[in-house]
Length: 271
Image (tube, rainbow, N blue to C red; front, side, top):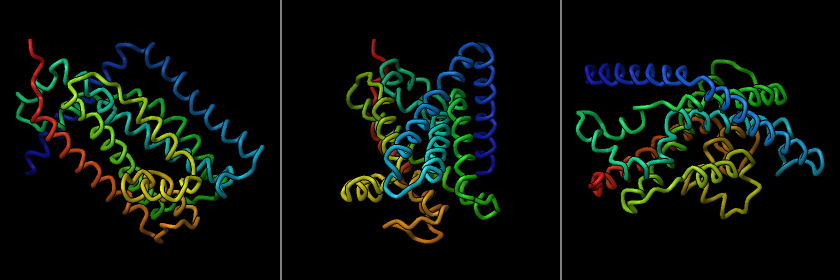
């Protein structure tokens, strides 16, 4: 088992090195993303500021609390872009026969699909996320002690796997549809509308679905509420980080089952 872990670790580091070299090969591309990506999140954040200023708090959350929530959501979004954005474009891999190569190698197919290339463009999302989150921390008086740091790490790992699991589960439909579909827009819209704003602003039926059926509420809303001491209907003192982590593991496990079920329907690139 240890030898297997060492092997996968060495392969992951090799792929990471190749991804970094690829970025440096086309620096203008990265510069373009460094300008455009942060700009869209800054505009979104400014829109929230305008709404709060003109109409008051959103579902009882003030501007500082919304900044904390918004920043936390963007950070997990950035991490999912780095590790799991391939799920958006799985249809291309299915149609173009990329899985032929994965199936011939003596390694997990899902691992290869996720980690043969790191999307370091996601770092351009991480920068504005950290800036907004730090601003929110200052506004709400969040303390970076050991307990809170560990809670944040658990939340971000769980949130990243929830997002990644959803990307892979939805993308796996390409194994059955045999079509090229870009799911990026759909999943982006879904997560933008449900992780960057208080879940309590939605009807109770929607809150129930996004808490217990598709646990998107555990990406940012419930963890942020607990870290700031805001009471919610599903509030369980001290449990939100662990629930987020557990939800991430569960969603990704389900996505893995869907992925491998779809892989059985894979028919190569044909002729």
